[in-house]
Image (cartoon, rainbow, N blue to C red):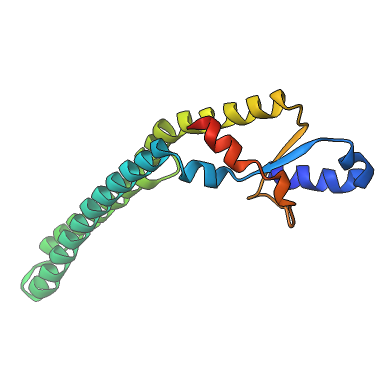
Length: 166
C-alpha cells in the first residue's frame, strides 16, 4: 500500500521534481532468494508446515473413519448412541479446525516462526539498503515489486545490495 501511494505521489510531482532526486531500484525478492540464510529459513518453514499438514490430514482421516463407521452402524444404534457418536464426530472436527487455525492462522505458529526466522534477515537487508543509499546520497529507493512499469537497468542496484548483505 505504501509503495502504491509513493508511486502515485511521484507521478503527481511531475518529471522535474523526479529528476531533481537521485533514485535507485532494487529487487528485494531477488536479494532474499539469493541469501543462504533465507533459503535455510524457508526450508525450515516448509518442513514445519509439511509436518503440520500431515498431522492435520491424519486427524481428518480419523474423522472420516469415525463417520463411515457411524454410517454403517447407524441403523443398529438407538437415539442416545446416535447423538453420542454425532457429538464425538463434531467435537473431533472442531478440534481439527482449531489445530489448523493455531498452526496456520493469522497469528498461528507458522506466522510466529516465520517472523522469528525471517525478520532478522529482512532487518539486515533493509539496513544494508539504507547504508548503501545514504553512503551514495540517494534520495529514493524503489523495490521492483511495487508499481514500477519501466526501469532503466543502470538504476537497478540489486546486485550491489546482495553483495553487501552476503
